[in-house]
Structure formats: C-alpha cells, structure tokens
Image (cartoon, rainbow, N blue to C red):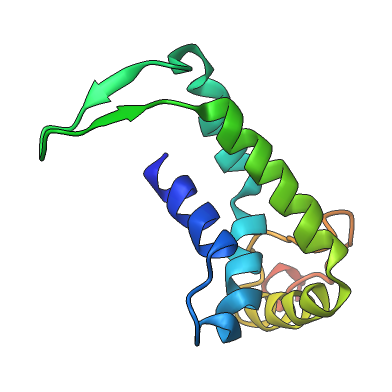
Length: 121
C-alpha cells in the first residue's frame, strides 16, 4: 500500500525535470491499476485505524477510501489526456515488442498477434 501512495504522490506532484517520465509513470500506474484497487479494497476494514510507526514517533491513519478515490481520479485524468495516452501507447508497443506477455494497458480489448513461439511448425 505504501507503493500506491508513492505512485499517487509522484503523479500529483511530479518534481521539476521529471515530466519526461510522465508517460512511464502513466503506463506503470495503469498497468498496476487493478492490483492497486484490489489492495485498497482489502484495506477497507482498516479505514480510520491509526498505527504508530516503529521507526519514529508518528502516527499513520489508514484511508483506503481516499486513496481509491484518487486512483479513480487519476485513471480518468490519464485517459483524458490524449497526448499523454499517445505516448503511453508508444511505450506499451515497445514493451509488448520485447515482452509479448506483458499486460495490455491502453486497450485491454485489443487482440494481440500470435507470437512466433505459439506458431506450429
């Protein structure tokens, strides 16, 4: 769950000079979207629960509902940015060219061409 929060923070507050990585962040965010949602849904019973960090004297309050809302907001935002999504499509095509079994992010309904390893000889 800490990774989810970090990803959301990087999308929301991209440091100056890191804008070049936004297509990569968008791709990997969308690639892990369903897993992020599943983790947050499992944490729903912890809503409002506080924990003290073993590394310091600060408390953390679980708020999976807010994180889920942010994830859904970023999903809409990313899909609504046509320029960014074009760059994500290009990145995904490069990934799929070298890793044919990688998850499809942009168009999950798209049919892939059979890989050469699946062809019969």
